[in-house]
Image 1: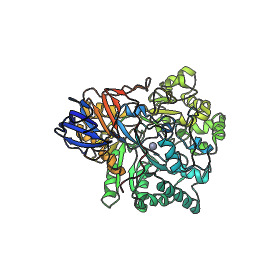
Image 2: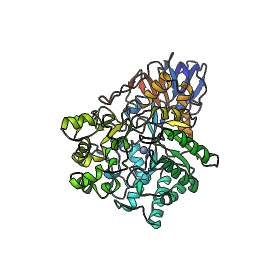
Image 3: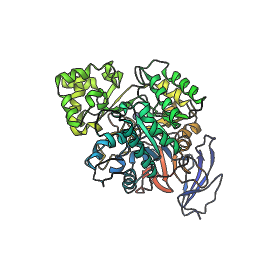
Image 4: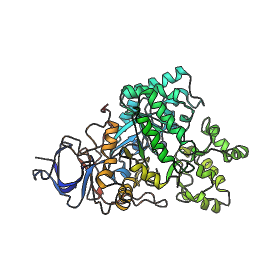
Length: 532
Ligand SMILES: [Zn+2]
């Protein structure tokens, strides 16, 4: 007797094979049978005629490290079929920390509206996460930036060899306690301070465990080739498997940058460096607004940073920065830059900076710095989004068979303690929009291949155990959706609308969505063991 049978759907097993009409039987949280017919010997049968049955989506790059502690339900993700998330990306993780006070400064999207137990080590953090009623499964990477802060605090230097050894020891300990990979964010403080010599000892720990080194590279515009080559050199020297995160070049890169980057990767691969990459399926980019500040302006603690934002001379120096993180700012394309998330300036969210500047009667750049200053302690959750990516680049990436599709967002909910947050323009609709726009409307990928990029491609790269495909004995993480109507409903002005077209979602065999509605099931788990 099965627990559940999904009957007469179009089954796409996630491996890229063409779909076929058939049934899936679930028992004890796992897939018991997949085939043209499995019979009706089940406690419950759901007819899924006309719908696609796919493995649940694996989002291999998110920043939900703290939002899942604050509200584990992961509503924005479950509503679009995501069943596993990989947190701890771009060098940012919630652990390890050396004091409870440090949790606030390392945690992305930290909000003091959330009450939560405290932690120090990585394992303790994962225990907290496991108790937060997870709507999705979670794999956690340990971030270089967080490890750097655990050893050096806010000091503005890369670390002496003995300090780097201490960082590597912390990475090793995090792996022992369940971390699934190591990440860096070389465009952010403190990752920006690190050269390959500082990263290699930590990447060597990842290599010994057969785990990924995922990196947000140093530069993806004017010096993109240096940025990508640095990532490759670090991986080669350490022996780690490399995952280049959200690879698409940014505004200011030459037209051929994506093509050239693929050539660089091919050349390294032919010499045995193990490289793969992922892409954000959107031409709008997003990041922390504070990342526009040059390194010197980000130094020190929060008070020092806020002090510079209101100092006339410091402001002029910030505005004159010749190489800001977003060249679209230097080009003053304010119309293509939108405030995405703010706490003290919530009334401006969804507006572009041309509008904001006009409304406030000031230069948009001054508006940016004023908004940052007035956000105060919320500065690290203040986000903006810009039309910094090129759709041709996204499509060229998607045509590479090893390219995974990621959100780069945070799991949130439009009710509860996270209701006012926004993670990215398509945080509530990235997977749905990928299927809607790139697969259905543009036909860049077939449905089978499109689904592969959000299921078996990331699952195999990450070493997830028995997830990412619909196979007998695998965990029953399943998404059932309507290929004709699946769509994102999120816009810059209304970024918190859930996706549509998702009928049923199973996480570890439990129905998290049923008939298009979220159930009260939160059957996700923290994953702590992986295939090498
Ligand atoms: Zn990143």
